[in-house]
Length: 564
Image 1 (spheres, helix red, strand yellow):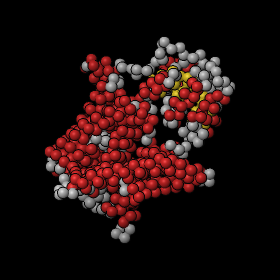
Image 2 (spheres, one colour):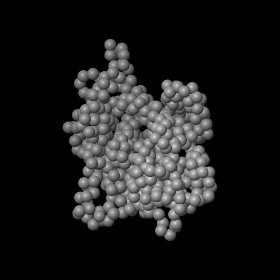
Image 3 (tube, helix red, strand yellow):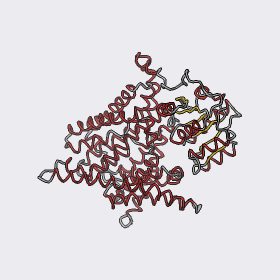
Image 4 (cartoon, helix red, strand yellow):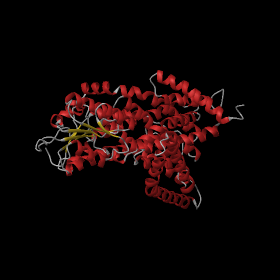
């Protein structure tokens, strides 16, 4: 029966074991991803018992990759990257160079060719988006300065890996050491064609996708059917990925990534992310199960030395490189340790890369097993690394003067300039992303006093350069609200897309100033409705753009365009 229904058999057994081991991993305080990989290992060809259909699993994994990359695109923000670009961009690139170089040297020492060694090193240089985001969310660090820096750092890594995935098929002949008179022209022409195809597809998405996709979703939204909206988003992700592969010769992953990026710019991005999350999670599980099928447990006792060496690169070399680079930028010790712990693991991009390397003949099954084993171990150990950040900081401060000095560093823009008088009745804008920054500038142009609050020093500096006042810090901290002159404010505007953060800031502000009017840029229609029921003025996502916020601010302030 299983032989005649390989899809159903693979789904039933694979998902059933993934659920079982995912629950077990959760009970052991490990990421469920570890359980999914173990489930794949058990139905793989290297272990006794039921063996899943490798062809079916590969196709399901391809869908998982598309939806994973679509989700990455939905969360990819140029604004978030630009906000931490001075540290995240050079830091991520240097850290990737260190990890890639060390990984390549290790691979060469264990018998891989230079092409395979480069792919192997790259696979060790990028952390898991899934593991990082879930770890930061669990510790309520996602909206803090260190959390944003870690996310921005990972965005740079993700972007570099997207480029690597696009370029690798074109470079594969050269990396394989192809011989003959046509070797060099062949890969050069292929690379040029790939770049032209990539540019053409990106241009098409920028010109047509930004107009056609939001228009399509608007037409579907008018029907009022949640089912049709979810279907429209999935169709957009899969169809664009397929069209990118068939029409432009670029990867499914890149097509889905660009589809997510385009959709992120529309008013429907938050709803698309929420409605498709269960489907993306389900296929992500299948992807991790299919990766686990690649793992040969015999590598644990057959190649213990390579495994330990690979883990040393991931857990020690990457961690030290990231921490030193953050400290070199003058940031606090805790920020450096948190970013280092965030990046001390490898995950989905590593799997995608080694799977592609295997298809191109650059990596053998043994090297793929090393990467999967290193991912399993590093992901399992990541919660312990996060838990060790605070004790390690205390230990370093007791032992070393440089650590005490680094721990006492404060954000350079954590207070308002003494020489610049604060307005008598300012509007406080919490969150200086694209919408918050535009709102603050609009209020300034109307002659209203503005004080912005954001945990990103770069965003704070940008508003100050534009003539506004801003404080760098966590708005949930009452000291930051007091520093921003909450007691003198006429209105508090909450613009963060992170709903729990906005709620916590609002609660803290209510404690300090119960009578202060609040205006919330809600992350969903449901959140907007709940806020209105609680007496807070709120704008739903479809209307919460900067122009609408500015007009609502003017209405709440009595329409005045002059400072009070």
